[in-house]
Amino acid sequence: MYTRDLLSSPTGTVGAFLLLAALWGSSFVAIEAGLAYFPPLLFAGVRYALAGVAVLAYATVVSDRWIPRDPDEWLGVGVAGALVIAAYHGLLYVGELHVSGAIAAVIVSLSPVLTAAFAALLLPNERLGPLEIGGFALGVIGVAVIADPGGAGLMAGGDGALLGGLSPELLGVALVFLSAVSFSVGAVLLRPLRTDLPIAALQGWAMVVGAGLLFGGAAVTGESPASIVWNATSIVSLTYLTVLSGIVGFLLYFALLDAVGPTQLHLVSYVEPVVAAVGSWIVLGHLIGGEAILGFVAILAGFAALERREIAAYVASHHGFGS
Image (tube, rainbow, N blue to C red; front, side, top):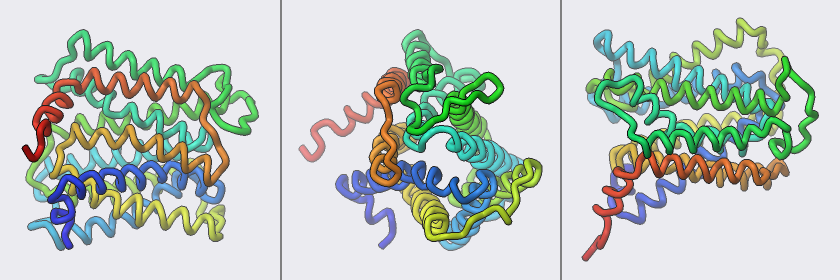
């Protein structure tokens, strides 16, 4: 059965949304578990090399074409590969060496807020009013609350040692925040570059290009494949991230993007931290503190302020459904 058939009913759409949130939210926990056995950039590179080949293969089957054919399309692939795949995941994986997957998921949930802010700065027809600026400020405050310079509550078992004046936890928060910035800038820069290249082909090529950049970064920083430890945990983590969070997750994403649009799909970012927090507690025994919960609420309020018109329009269009 095709994904469009599964999304032909409200129940199917909600189920697909929740499944995507579960797959992507749990990926933060899988990354945290796998980092005990993989160098971070190699870990991300292997994941996206495998997933990229699979998504490109999917694109050859479902799309009328899958090879970019002009400079604008290749530029879009380059932007997505460099910022949305390589920089985002490289910074995220290194950041998760210092903070838990649950904390990382909360910080990454700021991405829709950052995307709206960067769109106002970089695109000519976008602007932020006072309420939107307030929403952006709320999101940043949320991250500041999570950062908690004292280091309390960020990650179970933190040793508090300083790295260049930063605690490991604060360094991890900064790296994950920069990963969300990279993702958001990439998403904004892609808007004027959109062509009729199918989204599955764009994403597949971006994964392959991003994997190449991650492998290059691993070589520059001295990461070696010999340092990978192959055992049951590392294999399960890599397989889960590649097949379920990567291939299946992105196929669901493509289908939902067509079904509900980008604004509603952004809401998945606010279910992911809940999944990550529960998964981190069950699998790794990590609990997030009150600061992280308060920060998440601030980020969610910021998103609601920034996207209030789109949310109101969506609610209005579904009011009285079936009457």
